[in-house]
Image (cartoon, rainbow, N blue to C red; front, top):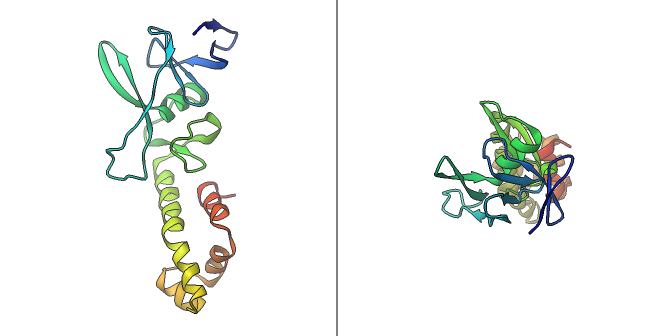
Length: 176
């Protein structure tokens, strides 16, 4: 594949690429594709399926630095290349909740504490909201549902039950 130098970086296969700041010889696109200058081709990423948290799988690439192989997540490569340095205590967050969507527009660098809060809220939506709706359909009173699922107020419960699953997940992940 032909690699062309442009004013903003490189272009290969119709993709604009930038040099990865801490891995010499590698370029990354805005959507997380990695190109090796040594092999002159795009590398094949892989998904870590050995994670204890099966729902949290990320796209990884094996990159060489100083003769050693390093497993690096695609979202980290994209964020550090296109957004900037990730300070200590901060993490890369996937705005849409899809850890395989590594487009720079879907990534943001946020405090680790906030990242975990959003993750727990999304987990709650996925695991409890369908049960709440099912209990409501089966005749359980809103007050019983509020108590069963530890919802702080009837106003919050009404908001949860009035939103579509997609809109509720979007609200939890982005606050919008």
